[in-house]
Image (tube, rainbow, N blue to C red; front, side):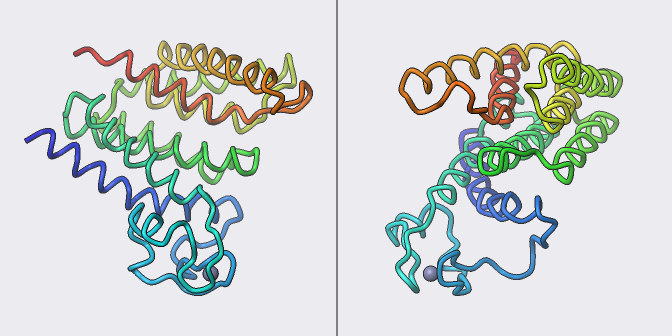
Length: 243
Ligand SMILES: [Zn+2]
């Protein structure tokens, strides 16, 4: 049964992912996520339910708008696939415990949306990070978390203070990064928030050096750190899982 449950969650994740693409595009500007309905970015034609089936529409229409033929950005497909994988991973990481799966789904959803916004705009808006911190604390208070509420609170504080210090000392980080690490701490607690930061720095260094060697990144060009923090959190959550 459980393999079917994981697969069903993955499919649900594809649909949520298509909604998260809208959230990532609109919420940073304070725009509504329900109105106006989704439309083609090139011609503005309103998209019908048939155009909004995750992955399938994108592949059947060969990445093109059905109305004007414009090539659609890869972000639509990528965010759907990432969210589908995140939902399945949440179920697996949680040992298929449903309350923990719910916490994992909420946590990974915030990470997907924030990574996408940071990649596209180099910012992590308070409109998304602050509700994420609140969600992490609330789930812990409700007993639906990977950590008890005291560790959730401490994790959020440790995450925020730690990156704020790094920012103060080096000037390398944005204020949004500290709030994202607070969010990660609220879900994972103080010990794992340190691990997440360590993995994020490692992954960030490897990718940064790789991009520089490939000539894709200049030395003075900043990389968004949010996706690396998210990746660090996912690695930590996966390793913390006892099978
Ligand atoms: Zn179009």
